[in-house]
Length: 263
Ligand code: IPD
Ligand code: CA
Ligand code: CA
Ligand code: CA
Image 1: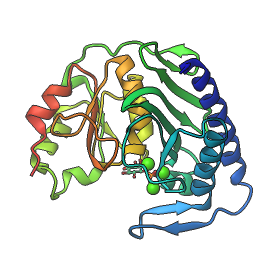
Image 2: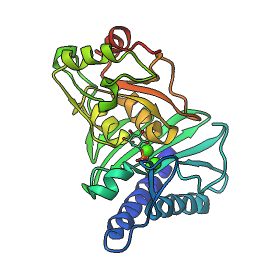
Image 3: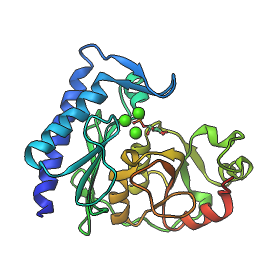
């Protein structure tokens, strides 16, 4: 399997999908809800996923595809070549802000991340990686993440963490928020992951993410030395929802040990 060939194929496909999404703003976007009134999906999420599936199947008919909107087949094992796709990560941003949403894709072979992409559709910025060969922000190589102290860190965290919740001891999260230099919340997990791998954020934590939110990002993370896991410190599960942390390796352990107490 020639990864360079698949990488070229994937990049062209992502850029084409981005063009289609940008042009969608000139016609009607149909908004629906899924699991709850704040869980939004649009015709563009579904059409983009279908575009990816058709495109991949036409060239690589045996590859499996796991997508958020379930437009493809059911995938319950990571055996063989598997594409994990979020056609629009940050659908609420897509609808309300017309920016700050990503296409993110990971390509795995027997569970090993080989190619990873996070594409900021409105900025036209692509974060990408090839397993063992490095990671890039557009054409610029991304460096290994550098040492820093937690006091200097800027972390991505959702506001719900600091309110009492069923998942973690929120008092400790308040301590973390006080300890770090600053916090941010962007509304697209893939965007926050892209920021961590490029040193624009130093960590990002989430109480619940799905494989398609993190698949592409975990491949990029490995190439720059960022550590990604669930909040128990176990490897990310790419077949079901789980908690999530990605961090600069110099603060990862400290955040998990001193500030995350799962209930
Ligand atoms: C969502 C975004 C959001 C995160 C949610 C995800 P979607 O993805 O990444 O930032 O907090 O958990 O579901 O639904 O917009 O693709
Ligand atoms: Ca969604
Ligand atoms: Ca998502
Ligand atoms: Ca999505």
